[in-house]
Amino acid sequence: MIVVADASPLNYLIQIECDPLLRELFGKVLVPAAVIEELRHPAAPSPVASWLLHIPSWIEVRAVSARPDPALELLDLGEREAIQLAQEQHADLLLIDERRGRLEAKRRGVATTGTLGVLLTAGKRGLVDAEAAFERLISETSFRAAPAVREGFVKQCGEWRRRKD
Image (cartoon, rainbow, N blue to C red; front, side, top):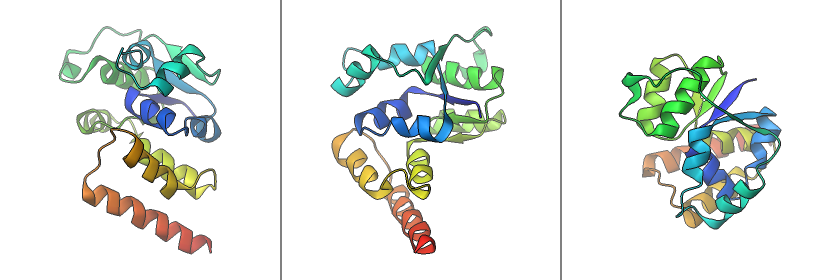
């Protein structure tokens, strides 16, 4: 499975110590160089800065070979490169949180999920307590989710937990 990640899911999963879930779920994750540079921002949270000092071996930083796509210019550089890399690599999945980026990726036929999708998938597989991770995400980071998204996440966790029991 080929998976490409944008900065936001990496940032948040690192902060709540759930980034190893990516290796468990996908094996290897491709990350565009611009995403690594975004994560290196001077205001990055300390767990992210520490992670960057020892990037895990299952992260593969890749350069985008295509010229910048003018149709993506409304997105930030990391999102643009993540979408382009996903297309170049014929990725099975793009990890991206930002709404405009997700919509553009889907318009181009690239399957997407975000931070919450990773937590749900890992929770269903018994790799993490998804609700506890979600609470950390909301309380310990700048992650924002509309009330309907929060309710939907908790509802989905409850549904698969009931099926499991």
